[in-house]
Length: 335
Image (cartoon, rainbow, N blue to C red; front, side):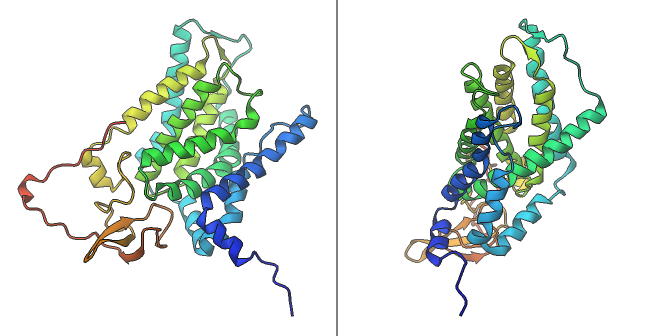
């Protein structure tokens, strides 16, 4: 007789009831252990945090929480690249545009560039971008946007879910306080993390839950931020945050026509509203005797049953419109 060395059913059931809590604890632990190593030998340890901690936590938890079907679905979304060229323009160009705008405002307000500052050449920039894409983008985004975000979207608005992910992401950077952040810039930097999380959530919802797009946007943002970090003066982080807020408002000012044509969820609308996405798995739950309503699963959860009920149908229920000629166009709420 061989002893069972796998996790106990009770432990797995606990993880499935609280997957986000389990992920946060594990991701923090796998990333923060480098903090103690850094404190012991700061001259030989590059950073007090391990960026691939969220990826390792996802790889350990996902088979237990969602099975191998969930692992395959996550890999599929990491490789999901057919999203339209305009999304590549947004995820690669928007961080550059916003950061350069913030730096320009910073220089107009009297900031100075350090004498030894010089822009790296194209080859150096490409190498830096590729390194950040795999070390930070791939190391973090499968966790934040691949594991946590789709679970927080169930029963919540996209805005609330994005802010919750932003909080988890901001606290995860705690070991960097005192090295990259201090009392003077931690507040504007923290606000920029929340704004960045909202923009990435918007991209995620409009690209069918693609993880590749957040990875590219994360890499683009960090690359241009590192290149332009030598602008000194009136705290460029605060101006970067201001421009990110403006960009976030413009990005989320979706028109109902665009939301309806792209099948995206409006930022202020709950993901469990079955008013669009006819191809999205629909779950059912009894509301009153003899009635039921559809509850849509968030992108990334596949066809697994939601907490609201069982999988009922993959088609949108037919709606009876008393005035088809006066159908109102839905308008996404402004943030």
